[in-house]
Amino acid sequence: MKTWVLTAVLTAGSALAQTPGAPPAEVNDASKIPDAEKLRVSSESVAKMRTALKDVLGKLEEARNTKDVVKLNCVNEKLTQIKGLLRISEQSDVALQEAIAKKETGGAEHEFTKVTIARSKVDQLRSEAEECIGQLAFRTDEKMNIEIQEPEYLPPGDVTQVTTPTPIDSRPPPASPTL
Amino acid sequence: MTLERGTAPDTVWRRLVLIAGALILSVALPASAQSAVPQPVGVKIGEGRLHPFFDVDTRYDSLIGFYSGVPGGTPLPTSDVILHFRPGLTFAQDTTSSLVNFNGALEYLYYTGLLFKGDSALSRFQGQALLNTAFNRDGAVEVQVSDSLIRSDRTQNPAVGVGVVSLYNNATLAVPIHPGGRALEITPRVSWQLELFDPLVLATSLPGCAPSDITCTPSLVNQMNYSNLTFGLANRWKFLPKTAIVLNASFDWRTYLLNQTANPTAMILNAQTGIVGLISPHISLTALAGYGGDFSGKLNTFIANGEMSYLTGNDTRIGAGYLRTLQPVPAYGNFIDDRGYVAARVGLMGGRLMIVGSVNFDYLSFAVNARNDLVFSASLAPYFDVASWFQVGLGYIGSLRTSSLTAQSINYVRHEALLRLTFRY
Image (cartoon, rainbow over all chains, first blue to last red):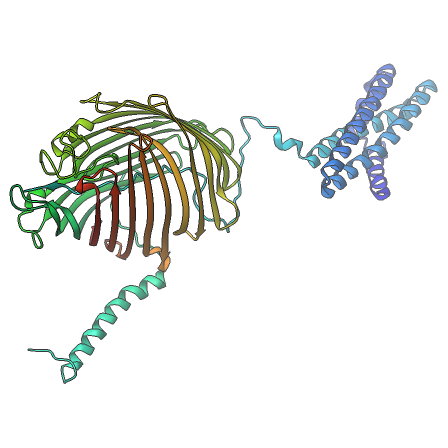
């Protein structure tokens, strides 16, 4: 589990730690955002990630109730990654506030970018957690095409049709003294 | 040349046996090797194919009727050999979006007089035209239209106690609604049946039959002509690919065309629910139970259908079951049929050799024991696809019927054996 947290953090970190020589698009965008807006977006993102954490905790409970180990492990994996990203985001949010207070523009942009990337990743993980439970199977629209695969060993044809009972073979013979 | 066994001509017998064996092998071996049912070519019309065919039956019937041969004499059971000539056409078009199936045939029954002289008056024409269509099959709302027109001595009316020729038509409109993945299907249906009767042999009175009894007096059988309107609603939910919960209901409104006093009108509601389909890869179960009631005759009863079948491959199904139905009937208003049955269909040699058999035991209770009939029937019919254009079939049908109605023609034992040759293109 720790490995997953570490991987997630490193993945996010590697994205954030790119050199100014090849700045990611988010950094460029962050440079255009006013500091006040950075603070608002950052705190809002952290709040959203906390909400996502609560949702996924609910999913974990749901998976536990189904007693399905595969579902439980799947949700747990997403939850662990979200926890790690939330921790990083909370630290970055504090660091962002400090950097803005100290007028450190570069640092502020760096922390802001970390928060926005983490939020994006958390949203994705929340969707994946829902898929673990199977909720998406019930989300249908007019474009959805359901393909039912029947095991090959089953007999062919539709055996669920109620057949109309055949009438009695009623064919009494004629009778007459003469023909 | 005279052939005698045990001497030199024995070699001739051996040769005949060898030739017969070679002929059988020449037919059977390719069949088992190919393991496929040869299909007739037909004439391509649009996306379907039209197949002309011609059947010839040679049928021994142990009971073509009860006759005395002399005016005023006591009718006795008589038998004869009957030839059936049946030219016809079938058309089949089966695509993902539409289905059109037609089967039409004209039949002439020729009473040969080999066993009973002078029965040529029974020779007659019969026929049938069956049409089944379905449109927008791959859509959410499907439309099915079908019609069956049959002229035959087989009738849908189990109260008939003497030989008749029935002209029967059944027109049906159904609209299956199956949204999404077709797990749920709701099918409203309306159908109209009309059946008209003519006597096979005109007679005014028969032993054991009251002269005013419309069920067994040949000159009065047309008094049972009826019209039947049926409204149905079938609901099916497949909770597994081959297993479903069903809830079916139908309402029959039966009226009579010529005699409303001798035929009580029937308004019958049948509703039943249960499970239908596979309970294991090879075992199919039908377990339905419900209510049947005649609002005209104030009859309430239960109806049911329980069947267990063994299925394997494309062609084999062996099943046994019990069926209880409530249906409208002329002269009595309604009747309850309690049926025990065994039915088997076995395909061998890749489906080229089919063996179809059944045993049915029906106990009919007309208008709550006003009359009771017991009908037992057994049939066995193997048929073999020799080539894509030729099929050979054998058949045996045995039937026994006894009734609280004392008419001679409703208390009988009958044996029929037939050889059928079918030529098709």
